[in-house]
Length: 592
Image (cartoon, rainbow, N blue to C red; front, side, top):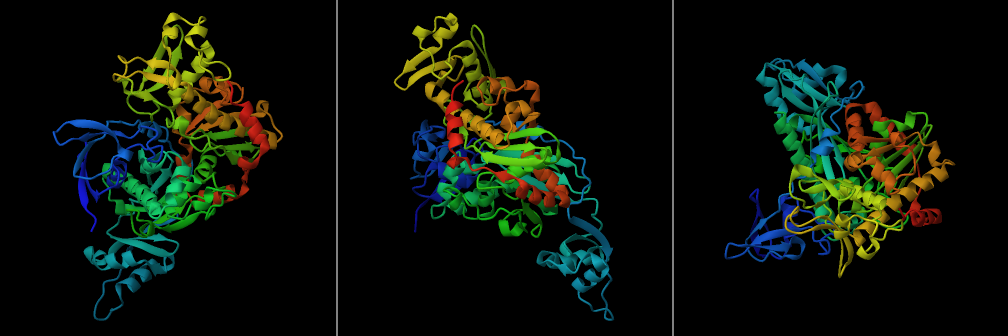
């Protein structure tokens, strides 16, 4: 029998018992403790540093992915108060939609049994419902006897597609709830909604705990191909969703069992992992998903902690790397029904882009990589306390730091600002090279002092040790190259879509930046580094968590769920990996 050890994670004192020999990173995942591992546990990114208590009571720093558990341990996770509220704040809006969720409540009085009326409870319930229902689900049958006898037969039946999903005692027709979930590669967002009036009651979000297996979808797919990998990835995301549902229910003082419908959007890999369908063949040409059509199953089949028979609808995918989250963006922005030319861009790890021209849509995915999320950047981090989020450079560097705390690193919006400003003042040359001190005569003395080099190459100091946590926060030449690769991928994808449609950038009426990151980048910086084509800044609009908004629309409307399937079929997908024109545009887009 394999030996087991107890691990306590501070500061929350979360305990978990795990098999000997697994890493602290793996144990954190099993405990539901958020800990970044964007390199997939290879020990190359350094983002999973923790403090491990030694036998003398002191703490020593260690990489969680490289430290095996060979005794009972206490591990301190550095505080990272992630600004997930950014994503929440962007989505608290109402929709001009008549609610028609497909799940309804019917209040009825079931006849009282007697020696003369010995019909079973189920038969009497269906008699009372008449044409509204013809079948009863198992969990409803189990709760039926007590429910019909609590208030002399007065019950509320929860009905969907002619089936009774649940039976509640008394009249509860004023309470009908659903939850919409956006499974992002980095963040999971859940919204609790009132299905009667279509209003959003509350939103909660958390980091996607699958990130301990890697920052991007390729790393997740590679892990899923291991013997227990798919089970692990599925379990992580289900646990995260259930925690969010539990928090929402507690905050709104309802029971999770009162939630009777759920919709889910996510990229194609995320939807596969949520459904526990094998994503292996997404990783190689021709990038074929298991399913593209919408999937609807019962909550209990997935382990979702809401009403057991609640329908869970998973949005359709467009292609192997353009998924239901993009369908959600299209639904929420309604570019499919607007006259004009629109670019909808999710600036993130997968870089999905949709070009809509008078309702005709083409899409692509640009594999921008996780640089925009802070991964693969030396001091990159998520938008959390201590992250640089804004940078202005004149004679010296001015920083805006989340939480007004000492600097810990830089998030995506800060990275884009920093590079755009460094290009503008001449710290970075047009082809992306950092100037040396000897070449920096055109810069102020303050800026010259920030230039340096070490065995790894050139760097520029954003925050000196006294402004940070004892270690200077720098932007390296490698960091700049990572950003060049990411922005060039998106810019090249835009160019290929425009050329495919016979358009140029002057024809664009609006650029819609989706996702939490897209909502916080400085559009002047995006233009300054060449991420976006040279259009008027007035044409660039942030649309927030549009994928999540699409999930919420689908939750409250059967019609929109049907429309989503039509939308997914209407979009023409361009596979860029085999296109020489994309490679050419990519190379041409690397410079500033």
